[in-house]
Length: 277
Image (cartoon, rainbow, N blue to C red; front, side, top):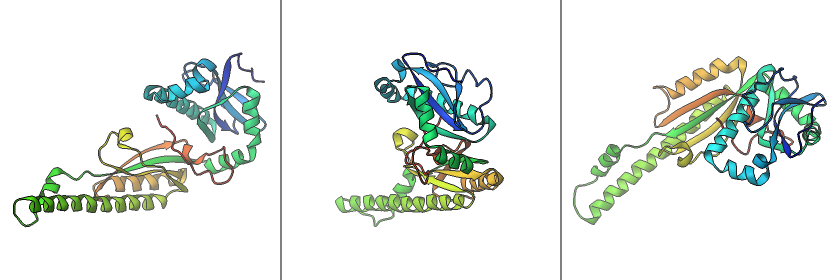
């Protein structure tokens, strides 16, 4: 029987599983402001929860914290650590970061009301992991654009300047078009080895820290039995023999966050990307 949260606390839920979480969930997991992690029985399912203070996780306070990059990263890392701990004994459905309830009863009601969807998700995710792949355009060097500008008929004055500027613009446009086609080819090849794939919105330069545009931001759900095939394809695509004009970066394996939309019926394809630590 779970102990209800102390007065003034909220219940933060991290993940749902059919397998009782291991005894002694790691003290290092969870949010540093909260109490110990605890498994909460919800019919034939379990949900891993933590009591957290309203002062830090109430609507206004949480909104402010998640708008601060350092605090957002801390919350994301705490969430990820806890989901990973819960997944040690079997498949889990990771819940969105900062899923909060006013009481244990609220968390249990939310889980039991979606038990059919959650069981279907747990069946789908068993023996599978997620891989994140990002493809960026390779930057066109200044030398390339200058060479393109020098290829027009020599001359001076405004006409020559416009001709060089037009040539440089064509180089950039042609390079971008080839890079987009290469990114699509990467996606098509990786889908051959995946059970499912999800396309996220490409990240901005502010998030990536790169001037080159991000052309593909995707997640792939891969059977454990096909992991070697998938990683071999990644190695080919990201190596010297991969598509020209793009750079391929991958991370994984992850718990399948992108394929575990428990809050909607039907196809659990994502509408937003998880913040990864």
